[in-house]
Amino acid sequence: MSEHCDIEHMKNNRNIVLIGLSGCGKTALGRQAAERFRMPFIDVDESVEARAGMPVREIFKLYGEPYFRDLESAMIQEIAPGGGMVIATGGGAVLREENMRALRENGLIVFLDRPPENIAKDIDCGARPLLAGGTDALFRMAEERRPLYLKNADVVLPCAGSPQEALEALAAVIRDERPGRGFAVIGDPIAHTLSPLIHRTVLDALEVHEPYDAIHVPKGKVGGFVEKARASGLKGFNVTIPHKKDILPFLDEVEEEAALCGAVNTVVARNGKLCGHNTDMQGLLAALQADGAGFRDKRVVILGTGGAAGAIALKAAREKAYSITVLGRRAHKAEEIGESVKKLLNIPIQAGILDPETALKAAAEADILINATPLGMSGYGEDFSSLDFLERMPPDSLVCDIVYNPPKTRLLDKAASLGLKTQNGLAMLIYQALLAEELFLGRKLDKPALYIKVSDTLSLK
Ligand code: NAP
Image (tube, rainbow, N blue to C red; front, side, top):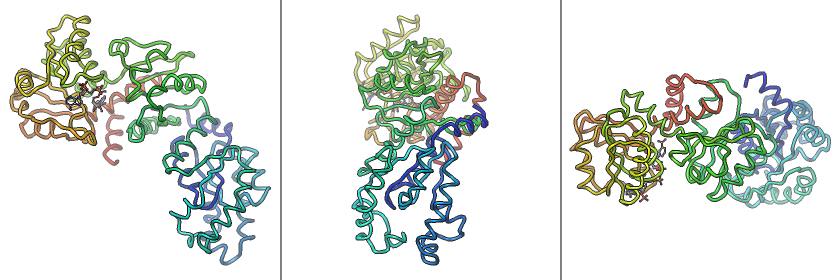
């Protein structure tokens, strides 16, 4: 979408206007929500300060409250007609009906209903002119103004929980208000996903002014989400743990690689239908190829028997690996992967238990060894009990860890110290996202250039 279209889109959208007590989080939450939905953000107090050339408390001290209210009203009359913005008002904006009339004309009024006892815990009352009397002044003000906030609100957002909960609730309001826009990632948990950062970097670089949101969808609720996505006209979304398999029955079409793996990580809305794709494995292959590696004619050893391990085994088979060995802590799961690969292609495949002895034997005959377990992942709490198998690997072999946090796991550290080639999971993560973006936008992208931009962004994080 061009910049021009985006401006048109903005004009056609109502503002999201935040009202509520001083200190309830209008500025912080408004700013974060605006960034998330790529909407302009305006804080009325900050705009008044910029125009007056002094802080609000100085205006109060030098000229008194009525003068400040006049400045505030003038600013609101100027700002309100613009569309598609998040506007944080001052706590007293509701005191003048003319303010609320102007804001309501082109805006959805959202009351951030934070209990004054919560506000008292984390603001410095002395820094706010009308709260200089301390917490008593805050409680008095809450009693006086709450009826006004309730009277003016289109939506009341209870904000007694954490700032993150309040942000999610506000994001849900904005999503409902602005259907048919942008992209998202769904998962449970979702707070720590890197997808928004990666996709927003790509969209920014391409000057595509679309939001990319992170939506918490609890396990078991993916069907409900898909129906909502259909109704809202979301253009596409990524899917992460635990929905990659569960989402399949709710989609209209599933492309070949996703159907083979039985897992979807990207859904694209096209001609009224939702089509599931899987870019994880192509992402891993692209990452290997960028380092001059690949599966063709290689002896591939995969540690793990979960979703990623199964998909890697299928990809290695389709790419004509010389042989594949799958090792897991449950032999039957390794054998199941072996069977599904055999059904597809006639490639020598061994499957067995992941114990020190089999690991030593498999590593001695590996060109590529891939860790597809969460062992060594930050926060997982477990790591390989022994890495001795790395010492058996042939000198030119590659050790790939699809874990990306930390970027250098113990496995990769030891492999590098033995002079083996290494690759971490970040390259796969970035390439799967770039491939998903190609599907979202329906065009080929300059992946090497975008890869550099995204990895720069991630290294700054
Ligand atoms: P999954 O389906 O939950 O599979 C995890 C696998 O690890 C299972 O085989 C599990 O064994 C095994 N495992 C767990 N703890 C183990 C332990 N202590 N010892 C031995 N095996 C153990 O997860 P997944 O989707 O395949 O993902 C696996 C890892 O890859 C995760 O860390 C994920 O973050 C990462 N990943 C990275 C990317 C990327 O883009 N870089 C993409 C996808 C996944 P059981 O079956 O016996 O439980």
